[in-house]
Length: 528
Image (cartoon, rainbow, N blue to C red):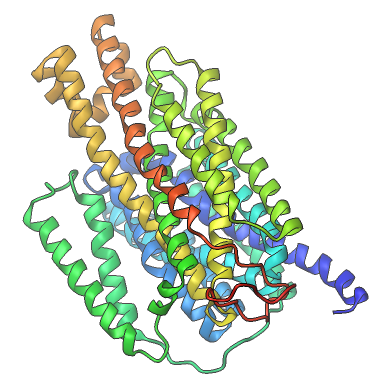
């Protein structure tokens, strides 16, 4: 490319990047915004028995669709597929905002409508997350890619904090329906920018979709997500429902493995896992999601119940996490672009994230907001080293034609790890909370406040305010100790991240998107 062409291409990449950033923000913000509106939704539809499905349906749709969107982008071209995913997401958003309205038959079936539309929205969101990273892989040479993916990791950090803040404002001042309608103008801007400004190279012409593999993978993933969602909550871990789902998931995934070996265009090419770097970074992504999302799920609970913050205030208290992650993500991206080296960053990130989790095991009823903020900075720094480098290493490990599948797999493993983490840590937390309350206040109090809906009601600030001081202190101490105990488990999983990262091989980053990925057996790769 001539110097003049490069000068002209830079502004267009920045315009396209702005559209991609909006799309990524939509996918990341949505669940966090909606969570603050759930009490209002439950109140309007009288849907307490099914309200968790408002979140589960979205997670399920996202997780199931992620690897499929990645492969479809490889086959049909990423622009068309990505714009389609935005359209599906916006359609799901509009319908979710209309759920239970007079236009759709009234509030009688409102909760069921909302759950169905959230699943549709999740299907679109899966395409948004994998599409953004794969498109950056098409537009930007691997040597330059770290800078842009660092920006995207920064957007994810901002979304983690902005979601609760925006959601709190909507819940306090507007109808819950605006938690969904707010996506429409933002998505419209992203569509306009990307339709007019984004021009991507096309690498394939053959279109043979592995529908059987896609169906088996979807069934297997659905079974896993439902196990992690229902296990220990809706049903006992050894109940017929959970065991039946486990059997269905195992059979489906084993059958998927056999089908993929003979498929001409597999949805998830299993040969990718023969590549050492790809297999290792997939494990890192799974553990990152497991430790990060599983443990962070309890931070707002601690801030609101133990430290007395409001829903909006707990979002503000996460700002140190965001700043640590944002600054390091951008800095690491620039460092990778400048040096072309990346192996050290997931190692350092894993160590720092483990230290951050260790610091959070110190949480108790006396922990100040300043002290907790310092702990969150450390955790955010560790995450900043890891978030974009995991995607970069996955993409640099494969040929350009498999970029979408690799991006989808990397996103999928982080997502499924987070689902497992939330479920496992949730079950551990519930058991620990029951035992802590029983130890301090007796079995009757443990049964009342330490399980199921009793815990949810007992730790409502309005309910806590009516309790005697001794009972309130006992409950808050039990809650704080139960949450800090979760981070000990997070330490165990986080500590494996730098161990896996240590075995990653430093393969030089390619200089142009069209250059083939270097084989891992080679001592060197094509210089940029």
